[in-house]
Length: 443
Image (cartoon, rainbow, N blue to C red; front, side, top):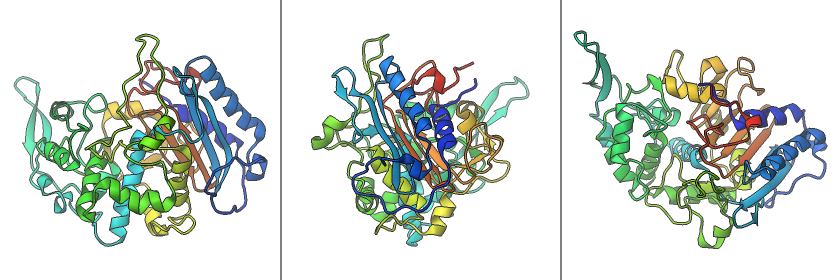
């Protein structure tokens, strides 16, 4: 199979429209689109292509709605809402709509961990078992071919080295996701144990995971996994606080991310964007209930946010950890997080690399993975435009962020969609349906 993404088209359009720009003052509390985007280095006619594309896909029913935000430094050059927050209820989309951001939770939790590391409370290079002793003696499941029958069978091996906190941050922990993202015996065991049950705590989740062997030797294979969910539990243990409280007090509140959290508060529930009904079934695709606080504070995919809130988070990373008066991380730590953390020759799980295609963190695509998100390592090799040093990630429910420090550019795209057979928004698995012009169909 050969995948591309909605973000592929989107980045190509936006980066093609951008040119150099000068310095710009601090981010305002209420974001407003600049009346003259040309002053920020954007071509108005090319931004209009984005408008026409998104509006067209809403009009023909392929998308319920979307919010798109493009900013250079601290000023939005483009900030538009399209279509419906709830198509069936005829509720229009607004720029302050709230979305389930899924794996765009991971960078926020990664920042939480690095804040503790900067304070000397968490050893990024140290074993996870220092904080979660359940993993200390966990064995590794290794496939071995029986020479007599030619059949593969799983045998248990000791860890060659412990799983580290850094492994959790960069997805080299030896962990997996349950199907359909992960596959194989360990992924099946995660599914059978229901490790991501929203009615369990992070501590209970870790106990379940620790009863299933590693799928790979820690540090040897890149596989997208529940690693950042485990990292969320590490944050709880080290900080002595529930994950939601730590993130609120230390990250979202200082940054002014007032609509970001693990659920939508009652006063804001009308702002929650919903997927449209599937014409084949007449029902909405399944999404988790974001209006109730879950027991499982999923560090890998459980948060909600708005485009403007997430821009504040991206601006913190662009500005070396210090937007306005809220300094979260030092410049060297931001530099570490946004650099490739994968060793030369790292192995990749083949089904995952096929699904990720041109946004995959592989040398063939001129990309790697930092501490919380994918990073661009080469300007060439990848079929998409972008500067070396750019970083990005996506969410299974239709959200994407992209940051180019060289151009001081941040892009946020929020769409309330889920899986489709035709195309993908995110290359994590067969994901949300989007217009075929945005992505290649599956071979």
